[in-house]
Structure formats: C-alpha cells, structure tokens
Image (tube, rainbow, N blue to C red):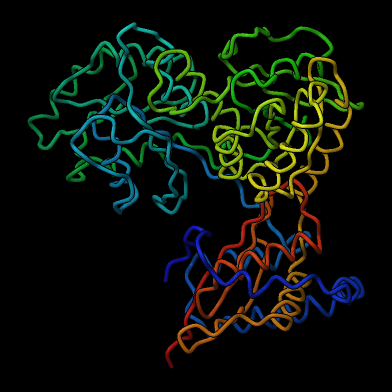
Length: 512
C-alpha cells in the first residue's frame, strides 16, 4: 500500500480529539524510566516482523535502532539536474531513469514549469533527479531570464545532464546556456535525445561544437543508450552530495522573505548596521539574493535578502521572473525563514502563499511584523483578527514586532531564530516517542472506520530538519487523528518555530 499521505484538509474527525492535554501526561513522561521505554520500543519494533515490510522500511528501522537518541543521519544523496530547452524530452528521460512514469510528458513545449525532485537508483547507488522547466530567450533577450531555470537547478546540483534534441541540433539558446554551465564548474554530460536508431547516432557528432565533450546519443522514449549515460553519471556523482549536505558548525542560514516593499532590505541593512542593500520606495528594486554574514547578539548569521515574491510567478518575464526563481533557491539553501509582513496593510493572499512556500520547503519559520511603529489602535484590532483567522495554521511560529526602519525590537529577532532552529533540530528518542503514542492511543483510540480500527504498531523519528515522524499502522489514520498527534507533540515537546511531519506506512500481516 502507498506510503504517501493525502492532503490534510476538508471535513474529518479532528473534532473528536479536541480535549485539552492531561497534565498528568507530562508528569508520567517526565518520570519515565528511559531504559524501560527503550526496551518496550524494541519489543514493538520486533513485532513488526509479523508484517509485510519493504526494503525502505527495513532501512528506516535499522537507522532507528542506532546512533544518538535512536537517530542516524543518512548522507545526503547526490543531486543530478536535467536541463535543456522546452520539448527536448527532459521529462521523458526522467521517467526512463526512474523506471516509472512520474514526470508529466506532453508533446507541447513548457509542460514542466517547476523544478521537481525524485529519488532514483542505478547500479546499487541512490541519487536525486531534478527535472526542470525548459528555457527560451524572451523577446527582449534578457540573458538572466533565458538561463534562470537552468541556473537555479545547476546551482543546487552535483552534476548536470544537458539534453539537446538531435533532430534540431545546437541552437543559439543552447550555446548561451553552455556558457553558464561552464562557469558553474559542475560536471556536465551532453545528451543527444531522440536518437531512435544507429543512423541518427552519427548526427550527434555535430554537437561536439558545444564544447562540452562527447555527446551521448539516446532515445528516452525507447531507452536506447540511457544505461550507458547512467553508468557515466555514476562516475561523476560524489558518494555524498556536496550541495545538499547538512552544514554543521557554520553560521546558521536565514532567508528573509516577503512580498515586494514590506521592508526586507531595510531589515537587513539595520541588522548589518550599514547600507548593504539598495532600498527604494519603488517595489521590486532587489533582484538577486544578497548573502551577508552579520553579527547579532554575539553570533554570526548568514542572511539572504531576497527579491519580493509576486503574484502569478509563472507568467512573469525578464528580471522579475529570474528574481522569483532565485528566491526559491535561497529558501532551499536556508535553514530558517523570516517572513516579513507589513502591519499597515491587511494580510494578503501573497503573504499566505509565501508562508505556504516555507511550509512546503520544511524550513523553520519566524514571523516578523514590520512597521510596528506606524500601527494605530484601530489597525491593531483588525490585525489581531487577521492573524487569528489567516495564520492559525502557523500559530506555533515565533512572532516578533519590529520596525526595520528604526531598528525597534530588532534584538528580539535572535531569540526567535534560535528557538525556531532548536526546534528544527530537535530529536525525540524512540522509546519516549512510543511511550507518548501509547498514552495518546489510550487517551483517545482511533475511531472505528468501516468496521475496523487502525492501530499504531510502532513509531520512530526518521529525521530532523524538520522533525519527521513515521508511524507503522494497520490501517489508514484519519487526517484529524494525525493532527491530534502533531498537536500533542507540540504540547509536550514544544517544537516552536518548526513544521512537524507525521507520515504513515500502512502494512498488512504476513500470510502464513
């Protein structure tokens, strides 16, 4: 059965689990004998032998029994980006590499708009494949937007597959992006796609002119030559990603996000104590993220000031389109996001979309309510109502009320960042987590659905950054029940400033 969870929305059984936290629960967990809890968890883990488990289950369970607090951090998988013009067959090649139909394929340019990552395996090695949207020069010939998609993907990859249509040959657009690929210093494999037979293979020789080395003729649709390309890819990919690895010990990385003109650049300048970024009343003056190492409260932080996110990103052109992509890349590289909101204006759908981007990325979150010095009593009443209605789903995020222009209360930003990052890094030992699950299921058993009552067999924290928990169950858990578990996790352990992910793996008993 599928491990994926459907979206948590719509009517469900959450109202059944709204009871307040039992104060006695905190006492019982605090007085828990940790050795005994680990023994009980080990017993539950052993009981999973009676169920049909997959290879990924066994990997997870093996990791759950090792390391500090029962957590092992697997090395970051190397990243392979697939780039090329629209309609050269990138998504078809992704599907061929994955061995299944995942990426949308249509004989129309531009079907893929966003970068999408998939886990894959070849010759016993696992890696991440990133499918990207294609590029074409716009009418004005703005170079930044021509290479925007490729530049972001390449920036976050260990190696690149550059796909060209063998029937079309090298175009001016291809040559433009080749210059960017060379400057990136990433290893590049040139793939000549749509070579359906040996006769066409000879046309690949013309692509030597691109200066990227030997072209590899393949047919993504029929599978010709793809195995040879993957063998070559394995020679180039590192064992552990150089770009996706978790950086430990360096300055914590903070992305400053917000719609245009909410005061992101002013915040960065005030934090730095000098004018590092151009500030202009006209919205959208910041184009590229600007990385700055800044000392706050005696610690060095890496701040990234980003271009404001605008509506309808995919319909933008030129520098604004490029800036939005760079913002997404900055968020991917960050550990915590500060979403800046202008308190003098109502919370907008753009603001909420930016918060959603942070949640989707799994980064820690701090909400900075800027221009607080301009707030009057009437607007304050409306603002509190807006926060209660529109930001209830991130009530766990630390809030700071600041004035980036004057520097008022800026010192409160550091404790909020530290709180969010500590929660993002938090680990719950397997024994304690299973003891909590036992208490919760005794307090509120899952409702009977279709004549059956799903049971939680075993739980483990599979990862941090963000805290990710996996439940092995005998049946599908209602979205409301999973939210109940998330809420109790927050009430017991805090997790202030970080999203919590609770995944399920529904497994059936082995047939005797």
